[in-house]
Length: 274
Image (cartoon, rainbow, N blue to C red; front, top):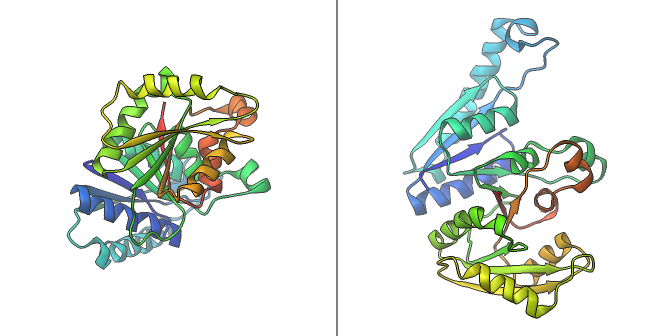
């Protein structure tokens, strides 16, 4: 893991994410790229020329540079190679573009979650990044003074389309010496007998070299609740899932279990794009 991208809006949740990224960087000798997007309101297509005078832009920019420099001097970042990026761009676009241009191996983001109408109509930049990023996204919800991936829950249906992203899951787990709890959530609408579910999981895992793992079949009323309840039962450190990246109408009606988990889980969540 060479490069970790960490977006910041200077909130406490962004700091939680940066502190976790710092812990990962120290373990893996990674570089952190700290980015901040200046989102300026505009009535036209060009925020710089239509809505703000140059002195005002410079005021915003200089204030952001000062904050970034202050963060980069934090003691918990000592000994880590870190660079900053400051751009006039929408946050989501900036995160996606920088993830590609810097060849990031991991994006670490903070999130306070959402619920009700806010979740339905507004969403969050974190949620959109989870939905669209080809790079694994680690979402941090609270202060994690000692980030630990010892008990790593990965929920899936273990179909063939999961095989490619699962290579990254195994790589991540092996680097952290994680015990992966592979879990198939059985629901009333998609029920499999224990023997059938176990055969599917055994066939799937036989193709990978996983240092430490176990398989589980867990029954619940829906997949999201099953993952959350199972994670609580084993006191998981981290929840992982693959995401389809649905967009538009399909996403509105079908939703995304990964995004729901980002909103509702109290534990860290990491997603891998199919």
